[in-house]
Length: 322
Ligand code: F6P
Ligand code: MN
Image 1 (cartoon, helix red, strand yellow):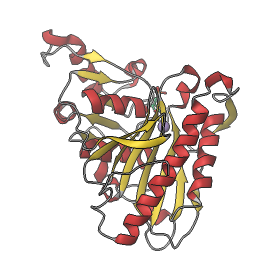
Image 2: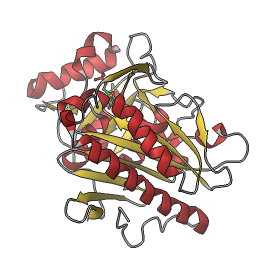
Image 3: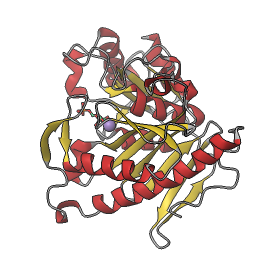
Image 4: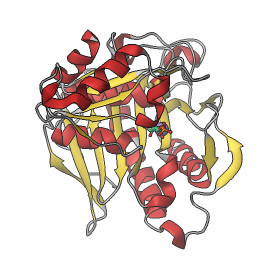
């Protein structure tokens, strides 16, 4: 077994068949993550991990060799899990596995692809949803609040898993000696407000005025209306920025902007914003599109984008006032 789940893991899921399916699927995803982490650990020793395949994924991003390999590892292993359907950033449509199974998985198999070759943390994000009757889309076109599980693996100095089933957040670390994910923190709480923000500032000229005003006020520090000196951090891998914010507080923003294709934001609701929001809320933070709670937003396209603001409650609230 690749993960030693906590006693009581997923106990809040009352339906026994669903709970058992969730447990089995998280074990399988941990197995997949171990394989992906093993590949990542080679860096340039494995030639071409970060090479462009020449193709684009369903969202138009460059597809790297490791994006495709990670997707293949996950789908191959999910075939051994009680999963009805699998949707992925790397695939246009939905994969049918075992339609009679009670749960479905959506995933960004390798988040932070632009950092593959740079020895900076990258990860795998996933969302588990209950299977709905009828067409496969019915199971995925749901608001985030219907998720059974949200979580992400980080391949960094440590390989870790941050996960929620709706009953708090757990942090597991892949122990180098046993090669097993073991529980490190049983009730992860988002650190209290820190005046620190993460945003791709190169897009400043494309932001809407409220975002420009907010960032200008952050930059004004103690002399501005926020009356606080803000610090800035931006990794450029959502999993790494989320992981940092969980451990030391702060704010992440990837707002919609004026560029063509970014009118609804950059990040994808189904397999990026929804699972990360589930974790952030369960850790005591909040996650919105700038105004509305991400978990409430309807979904009508597998690869739908959304503006994404998350972090300490207080900070997210300040942004919504702008
Ligand atoms: O998956 C999308 C992603 O790589 C995220 O991990 C990250 O937050 C974002 O894109 C970075 O976007 P940009 O290309 O604007 O830096
Ligand atoms: Mn991603």
